[in-house]
Amino acid sequence: MPKPFPARPLPLPLRGLVRLRPAADIWHKAAFSAAATMAVCDLVLLSLGRLDLVLYTAAGALCALYGHDRPYAVRARTLAWVVLATVAGVGIALTCAALVPSAPLLVLGASLLAAAHKMVCDATRIGPPGNVVLTFVTSSAFFVPQRIGEVPGHLGLVLAGGALAWLVCMAPALVRPYGPERIAAARALEAAAGLLRAEAADAARARHATAAAVSAARRALGHEAAPRDALRRAVAQADAALTAGPADPAGAERLLAHARLLRREGAPAARLRAHAHLVPVGVRVAVGATLAGWVSLALGSAHPYWAVVTAAAVFQANTTSTWQRAVQRALGNLLGLLLFTALLPLARSGEVALVLLTLLLQIGAEAFIARNYWLGSVCVTPMALLLGEFGGRHPAGALVADRWTDTLVGVVVGLTVCALVTNRRAAGRVHEALERAAAAREAARAAAGGPADGVRAARERLGAALLELREAVDVAAGEWWQAAWPRRRAAEEEREGYRVLAALGAGAGAGGAAGDDIAPRHGRGPRTPVPAADGRI
View 1 (cartoon, rainbow, N blue to C red):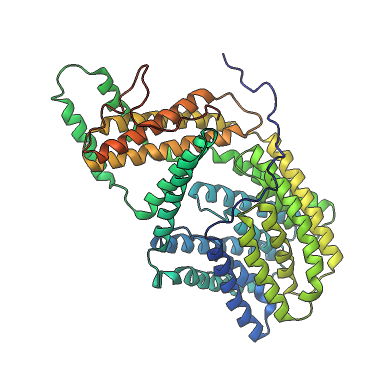
View 2 (cartoon, helix red, strand yellow):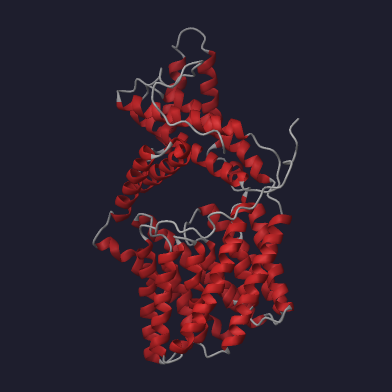
């Protein structure tokens, strides 16, 4: 019987915390879209003499940070939902700010909303910047002085900023309608080139990166088969079994595996179970953000929502990632406060200077955050503080002290809660992902030699299952205390799945004669060369 818990806690690494990665290839799209949207809003308010309303237009303008890796039809829907979510979240926050006099209750409300943002953004895979921007916007709004009669007008400004963000992000479709699809295809080619150049020790990670890029490109290009066609192909396989001749236990098992896969796909309960692993993450955010805000209040901070945002931002998929993000957040905030102190005299020299500095910091944040989170935080921290200057000047010393105190509170409380609220579902998710990957692999073998559409659908299903397996393994590998999970089996399943995936693709290109290449082998290697996994997950 395996031990329910590992023999010793997982060490928290320090190596690579501040190492810079290559810049994101489309960082400028998000950066300049958000900056352009904010610039238009700021110039309008500047001309009206109402820069005190910048916080509301900025909340909507920051929606321009989302969706830049998606085709325009998908981007339009995604951005619309982001704008509506922002308006709804700010509406809740402003209403609470106007009606709830208790600061601890406001912290609780901000924390619960932060937890909801985290779970929804992770479940929908919204992509960068994820839940952090939504949490920053709504948590700040909980502590903005507000009268209930002002809420509709302020929400109108948020909606106006969001509508402008939507237009700015959709404008490139007029000159390059298939730009996102081209970028997705280029990323897949670049990832494949990296795989061909990878050393043996890096082959598993490079193969995963290639599979993820290829999967993303397929989604962007919209080549998924219709569900009804997939069901017709499944029925055709069953019909073919009627004339298959002698008994075929292996063939029967493949058909049963395909049937289990079809039953699992699309079932409401299955969709709920697929996101069950996000519950511990949501609990961590809710508890951690609440406690951080309350501790900040107890220490006399005038901005407890900063502690809420910090705690919400440091929580990642597992303990190891949370530890890394916490250290990066603390380092970035410290350097950002030094930068804010240096820039403050220039920012207070005039309203135009304040607007320009805010825009430059916004661009810098997007340019640097993909290289490492701490480097992006160096720009985010002074930008957030300068946004508060639009409503009036505040004592610089008190601002810096509150920000640093709240950062430390959020980091310490976040790490503590992450250690105490263990993610017991991480190991279970690996087992479930293994089952799905094995079923998809058997279904792919059954589809070999069949119609081209069936082969393509089987490859896409198997590719998605392998991506899910790798994600589940990465999360489980970084949790410091959990039930045991089958590391070796996961490595073998991933290796075998990619072998079948490669053989099926090669067979499809040769007229569908891949059946022998992807049949189970005993004592023989695959005919199609596939980089072997290193066995360490």
